[in-house]
Image (cartoon, rainbow, N blue to C red):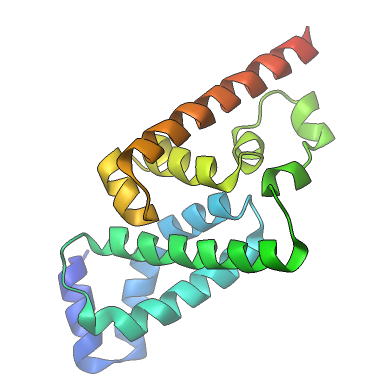
Length: 177
């Protein structure tokens, strides 16, 4: 497998579809999983987000300075696009809390604890931090930089997200008994 710098260099030099496809195939599977989580498993929105992310990334790729990994840079674009989308949606619908609109499906309750469903019900700030920290392995300093928040806010949101997830798990256990 080619290194990220080689893939980017090849693409920037030739601007060929083949070079882009190599870059796309290498990075998109992980980014798509991230997009699915950020969009509460909305496949259409996740696909749209990925397309927009690649368009944005290609436009800005020449200016990428390698101060972070390519993956981190692309995730930053993805998160910012998701943030913009949520802001537009909130403004349009005047929604105070996105998580209130997401209902637990009957099947997830009947078949035990569904992590993805529980994640999708978290407020977006909590969801972003718990995904980045507990699933993706980023540190609070990196999360703060990616999300444009204070490091303490990242820690607080992670604490609250975990607390919420524990509550959902215990509620689910109580239902099963």
